[in-house]
Image (tube, rainbow, N blue to C red; front, side, top):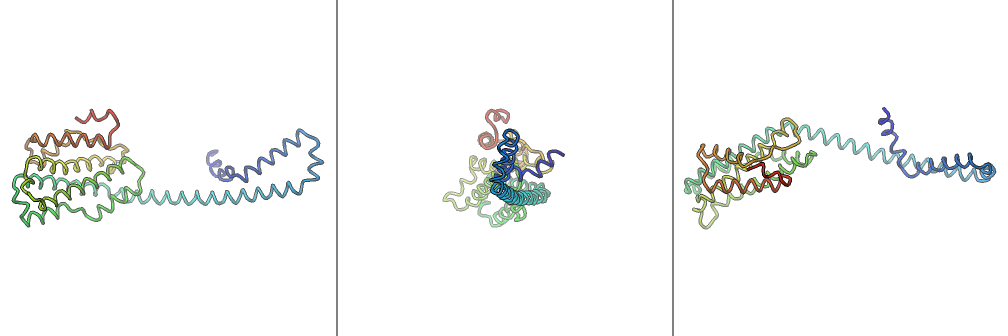
Length: 269
């Protein structure tokens, strides 16, 4: 109760004019108590003193009114932001499911392309890949608004990183047919890098589900074993090649640099 009263009157007590007003009153009271000569001085200067006190009081209430209006507007904006975030978080699990499916399809098609480089010139394969790798506008809008409105900086960093990596993966995929030697698209190194790019997106989006569904504040860390498990799944449960293992280690280090505190990266291997 005491805190509520203090909060209510805080704008009045913290502004300069009202503080001066209270200070002058306190000074007059102390002087009156300690000195008997104040009475004669008061009779000579009371008009000036009273006018000054009234001016300070009026100015103090005016400043307090401005502060109170600013604070009230800030509270309304914060409440509006909070409600928008609640609505956007309601759709967040669906958006994460969608982007996980996109990334898994990208990894599967990367492995398919790695086994048959002629697919890159197959119009049906290219049309299917463009459709499968496209992000729905509703999903993009939901992720963008969540980043804009919510106050979990770690989650913001994860979403921004996912969107950035997604654009890199799509650009790499679309650039295959424009290369002078598109046969490189089927090399073991190229296939591993391309596939693990999509696998990393699967793991990154999956790590955000705790926040999206249960409002947990910490994101699940991505380990090298997580990347291996997802890679085996998109490869039809075949074991990883040496090239895959190298990229797994590289992606694990990348994640540690971006999201982990010093010393925590040892837990990911």
